[in-house]
Amino acid sequence: MFTQVKELYASLGVDVELALAAMAKTPISLHCWQGDDVVGFETGAGALGSGLAVTGNYPGKARSIDELRQDLEQVLSLLPGAHRLNLHAIYGDFGGEAVDRDAIELKHFQGWIDWAKQQGIGMDFNPSNFSHPLADDGLTLSSPDEGKRDFWIEHCKRSRKIAAAMGEQLGSAAVTNVWIPDGMKDMPADRQSYRQRLSDSLDEVFSEKLDTAHNIDAVECKLFGIGSESMVVGSHEFYMGYAMKNQTALCLDAGHFHPTEGIADKISSVLMYVPELLLHVSRGVRWDSDHVVLFDDQTQQIMQELVRCDALPRTHIGLDFFDASINRIAAWAIGTRAAQKSLLLALLEPREKLRAAELSGDYTTRLALLEQAKSLPWSVVWEEFCKRNNVPGEMALLDSVKSYEASVLSGRH
Image 1 (tube, rainbow, N blue to C red):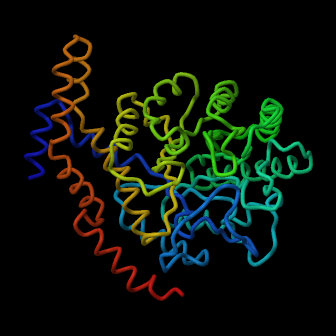
Image 2: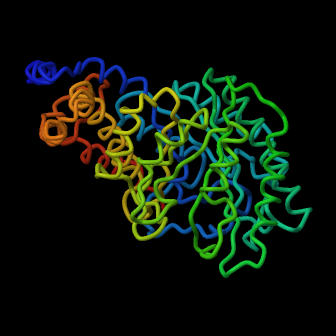
Image 3: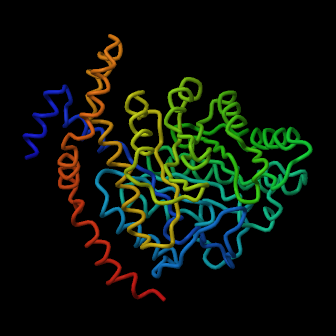
């Protein structure tokens, strides 16, 4: 059947083997925080705060670094292609020692680097500017309190250096993404001063030039959050301007805009002015609630735009959701595979025929081709991709998840 499907796509000018090759070299960065509900491994780690929330209490979450790595290895065994690990600073191996955020060092993450090397994957990194006593008032890098600003600046600086070491040791640049929860629940009287302080703080964070072969800096915008409904200091306009001015990567999170606003349309504009793009593929339902990614219109449109803009070489694709209401392994696997399937569907579009029809003004043919592409047997190509990578196909995925739940997760209390 696969041979027949290849021939069908070839009749439309689509090389299936080229699509599969592109899939194989386009990693998805797996977010570590899905495995333990954004708790991390700091000594005395408290409740999640700073406007973040995880709902659900499905049994079997990871309680230690070893368990989290075990779960990640299981997830990787369910995913075709090459992948990466996206780690937050609160996930260091602190050995039971109380290490504050402004004192983290490479030694606290060397175990993760060694593990990633064993797995043959790259890593990305994030400073954790949330769920901390010095973030309780909702302000970090934009705080009027100079001491608080200095604390978080130092945390971000150390995070960049750790990420650069990750990139150097693993031979693949780590993306260091700076997101902060700073904002106001009610109307501020002076928005500009907060944004000026944020800009100045970021300038200090990025003041040391690091080799982009090892570290890629990114900044992430947000529309609003719980506790910052009236103003988020790091808005889209703020970070778009900052990334353009300073030529950092810009992170677009699918859940960080208006509920009816998709990020797909922003991609071609953003890439005209910033060197690289970081995506947090998520699913916001009514608000930035970080639901498991689906093979839905929004995800498909994001991947379509990346392919149509020839933007894959300049784009880093990561996931950002945390769902504790279902099996966490399933959430990881279903969400990642949905992103991958969306990418494959985009790669199998008859792009040359679509572009030719559009340029000639034949919009009838363009529409017909777009609709035709949806019903082509792309799932056969997906199953072939899974087969070549020795991972379960769609019908076998749930059995693999349930087997791991019975043998491993059920023993965690």
